[in-house]
Amino acid sequence: MDTAPLFDQPLAPSTPEAPSSDTETAPRPGFKKTKVGWIPEAWEVVRLEDVCRSISSGATPKRGNEKYFSDGEIPWIKTLDLTDSAVRTSKEKITQLAVEENSCDVLPLDTVLVAMYGGFNQIGRTGILEIEAATNQAICSLQIDTDRALPRYILEWLNHRVRYWRRYAASSRKDPNIKQADVRAFPTATPPRPEQRRIAGVLSTWDRALQQIDDLIAAKERRKKALMQQLLTGQTRLPKYKDQKRSRYIFKDAFRRLSSRGYQIKKSEYQETGKYPVVDQGQNRIVGYTDQENKVLKKHPLIVFGDHTRTVKWVDFPFVVGADGTQLLKTKEPCDLRYGLYLLQNTRLPNMGYSRHFKWLKEKHFYLPPLAEQHAIANILSTCDAELELLRTEREALQKQKKGMMQKLLTGAVRVPADHPVESTPNPTA
Image 1 (tube, rainbow, N blue to C red):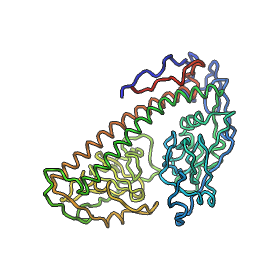
Image 2: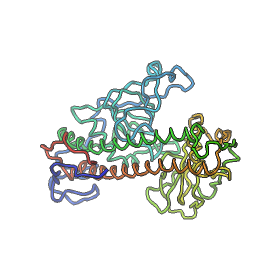
Image 3: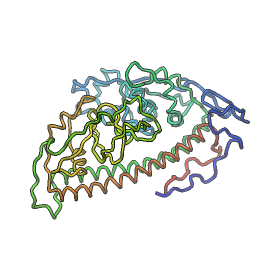
Image 4: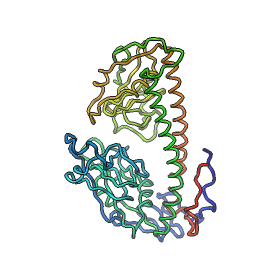
């Protein structure tokens, strides 16, 4: 997609000397200094609870009670369901009985959600309900008082200030969390409601473009998954190899585990910037950075398996191993390394929560075709990965564009004119 001009008419800088950051101390015409930085004089700073009708959190029904989960129809939102935008589905659903017996209130549309647990990489993740849903106890639910603020504006404000949650993180556990009291007290800049609507309308332009790319990514992931199921199980053989035998191997004869000793750092040592990427068992390919050169592992390419998360990743660059649970794997002679990656991605393991899963993986066996066919299948699936990587790169570029516009609009450095046709604002991608 090619980017196109966003506005039919330009947004107006609020003043020729509009402040560019919240760290400046010199007075600015038409602006005032507040605890959230420089904002226009007509804006207010309030506690987040001041613009909410109610603030609550959900619960987790007892996993051992099948009546709470079997054939559930009520979406049950957890932290990883939040993508800082609209929430339209959930990975798990619960029953009406679970709602009634576990304080899992079903929340209305336009409820704003904030993740409170999971460490610096998770706290402050947000979403806004476009479905009625319940949540677990890790999520704080905000029902906005629409006489004071608009839910979409509050969502964008929380996304804009996500780094500031770290100031409020407090926990007796290993990972820092935030508390509902922190959410209630969170300082929030509130323009007049008409301006909130215009700001949210402009930023929704990027949300629509991002959703389009997300839909494309999801479609290509489904296609890759179908190809993997057909090609890796032998349901479909490549014509050239259809008469050749597939041989059975147990895990230890196809894979070997590498030691991470000497290459691993703690989660508390992750940095936002640094010379060397950190890879752990999380879903993101890179979770942080470090400057510890003596910890860099150069035995790439290799496969990373998440002992707790069941995530399978390909790493083809020098990196530092992240926190506990990051398993490093290579393949043995009968198995091509890339083919081995796809085999593991297509392997089903029981979800044991945060327990270790490598013991289950070691019990698996695999049917391997000749190496030449493995190479051919790996090339087909690698093409799918390349297409997905292009889309993800495009999405990242759009996300950066939106972040830049958020910085301008949510500080008042750029104002949306009152007569700006927000509803007709074109999509930023062609």
